[in-house]
Length: 442
Image 1 (cartoon, rainbow, N blue to C red):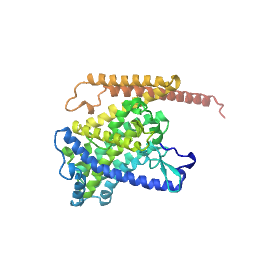
Image 2 (image 1 turned 180 degrees about the horizontal axis):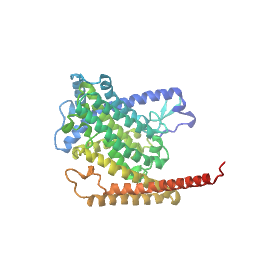
Image 3 (image 1 turned 90 degrees about the vertical axis):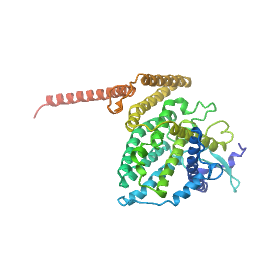
Image 4 (image 1 turned 45 degrees about the vertical axis):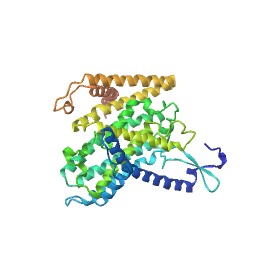
């Protein structure tokens, strides 16, 4: 963008002062953006769903209802803050913070734009990365913080001394175990393609002006699985079973009020923004789009637009789909998403091996064949599936369906090397026993 003498450009990471100032500014920027984004995501949800349902929506506080988030914040500040007498006070008070902090920390390793050249008063230009940090295990860092967020929900349910809250916490822990397997497996696809866990490397690998470099086109099944798993991870509809009001009053935060409830409310919407950023970075090219390479300042704007579109997709699902039954929720995670995630990873691995052997064009052939096979397999399974009874075949573990067949095949493949190893071990023991019997006795 600028014709700058390369001798005047200094990498910000090589300068201690620049690196410290960059960390402070980006940290404040992320914190303020997430807090503002949380407030106005609530307004976006109310206005967007009202538009979908042909309602007016909030329009009283400020022009077009723009001051509604501020009015809600003032209301929550002055609401009565009640603590149950039988609650574990220390854990009860810490639980909201344990939910909020991971939802903010997960954003630390996601680059928000390409490095910017910034002039300084010393006459030099500094190349400043737009991520708080770029660790070489960024994907693992995100998985760790996403998992920690569930502790806040579980501990809130346990510390509240309320049976409904406890049931909500237990549901959240079981849901997290079910869907994090699929989520972690789907995240392995970008790692396989780039041979790196660095978020910067993964985003840079998707820099293709024709958009075909985005990993969603390499493996749409993995992208779909990750999107569903991230939606379940943040307990958004139709996966909001930990706080189902028809069954559990309000679930894990039934006994919370005032600003402690507001922290849970804030954590949910910040988590929505965070998982949207993760999905955009892993499968939608991050900040890459047309003209971003020529005008780096467009990078954060492009990233923001993609995140807002993902948020609107979440809101669309909430306005469209009903809350599913809990046993069906667990069945979807274990019987459908996890087997499909294994197929998606195997599909990417085969495509990479074929591409290394036959060239890059062969990769797209494998991608199309794999996508067609999974699509037709899913349609065949749905069309031939018998209607479940009210009791539901999802809890009887019947030996039929696409998921069971796929897991049987994978189990058979795993059993082959295990059987060979067991057979060889038995033969070695037999040889050892023969040698021991034939050795001369004293």
